[in-house]
Image 1: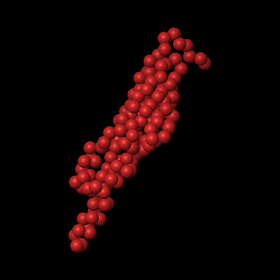
Image 2: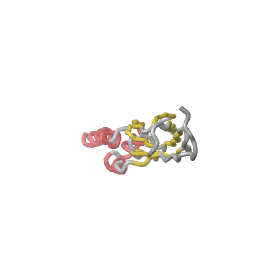
Image 3: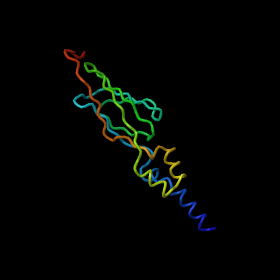
Image 4: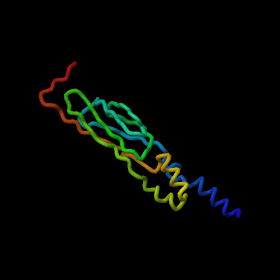
Length: 133
């Protein structure tokens, strides 16, 4: 009986493997190659709406939701993209180590997900456009 209780407690504390080892937040970089100072709006159900100026480094809460990005700057066509949310490879190990409890904790916290750490949004110049000062 003691052995069963020990195993259950161990599974609960070690079960959320990605939560413990990878955390629930992640730093990312957002760039608009060749364009400095673009205003980019990031939007997803998990992070809400965030506005940054490129190049930008920021820390995001992990989620299963991908993030839509729209970048704007005078004399450039709007650049759009998606920062995809992918599953961490260690989430599969959770089934063995922590079972359903560990997998559930990582899923609820977002720790079993990850974003691309380097993200680039292309912006095309508008021919003949002269920026206002």
